[in-house]
Structures are given as C-alpha cells and as structure tokens.
Image 1 (cartoon, rainbow, N blue to C red):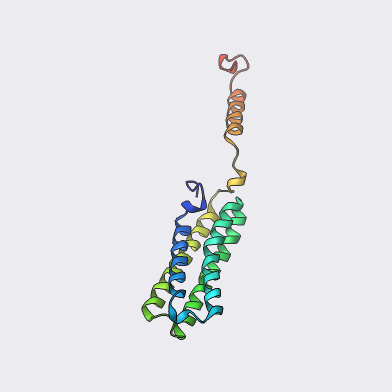
Image 2 (tube, helix red, strand yellow):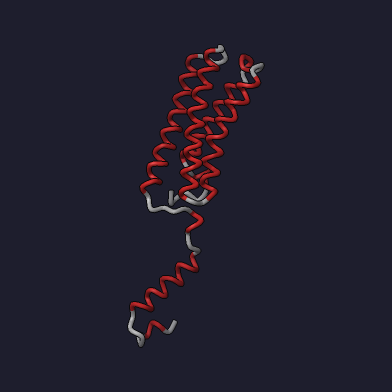
Length: 156
C-alpha cells in the first residue's frame, strides 16, 4: 500500500478494470441487447467493484478503505451471479461464463488479500500522513532533545 500514490497504481484496481471491460464486451453482444435490466445490473455491479476500490483509497483512512473493499468484494459476487443468469438465458457461452467467473473470483481474491494485509498493517491511511515539513520539524526537535543544551549543532 505504501508504494501506491493513487488508486490507479493498485494492481487490484487494474484487474477490476479488466473485469469491467469484459462485462461491457459481453453486454454489447446481440444476444444480450434486449435484456436492459440485466445489462444495467451486471454493468453496475462490475463498475461498483472498480469504483469502490477507488473511493476507499481516495477517502484516505484505513477503516474507510476496508469498508469500501468489502463492498467491492460483494459486488464481485454479484457479477458472478449475474453471469450465471446471462449463461442460463443463452446470452453468453460456457467459455465466456468460465472466463468471467474466473476473473471475478480472481479480483475477489485480490480484494480479500488486500483486506487481510491492511487489517494487520500499521498503515492508518493517507489522510493521517504528516506533511514532509512537519516530519522534518519533528525530527529536529527529537535531535535537539537528545543532545546536550550547549551542543554546537543546536545552532541551526
């Protein structure tokens, strides 16, 4: 998490984007074209995965990130369920069902690992990160408190 400067840097978000692309490609097919309700629902669920990862990250706090990751994980399950509906209605092939379900499960597993890692980490979130100037000031104060009062380096 510490190396990610934006949600776009997160591998889990990148894979969720692939899931959205896949779902949109399926729902553009002629077989799907008249089932507006299912098209809307499965697209919204897929977009929800990607969006909740982004929103959690942008909120900046660990607990908020976790909250939105759980929503994103649940949306992966919703996508999978709707893929079965699409298959049962003859909108997608068995191979497309397999590919879609595998990708949704993979994204769900990545989210689960991300949640697990965050839960045990000391990471609090970006909004709790001190600005560089504050950190430098804090370090200088720590150094000052550790040195004798007449030490020459205290004259900076």
